[in-house]
Length: 114
Image (cartoon, rainbow, N blue to C red):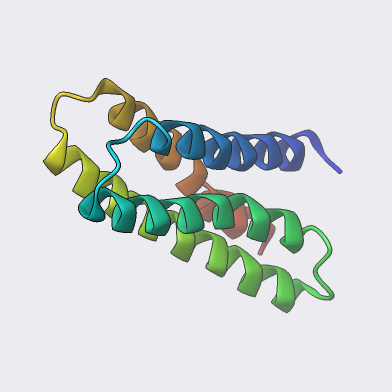
């Protein structure tokens, strides 16, 4: 495993864990429970799917799995935008959006592999 792959594995893992820890701090209400559920699934799926891509059966399978990673990252971005609209004073959301932008740089990495 090269250092770029390892860095992305760590980055995607940290993104999911940090989102989960942040979600635990949100108020317990119906509105937040929907957002919490969706963002928890999407943010952890980013890392899980990138991890799974490391054992892809072919180049085509790898590209497909990376596509799923990007899809989940975009969904995470959506839910972070929703939270940002509801909690505009939260500096933590901006931190997650910055982390997510780094994850989305996978697109550039993928293009280099092709």
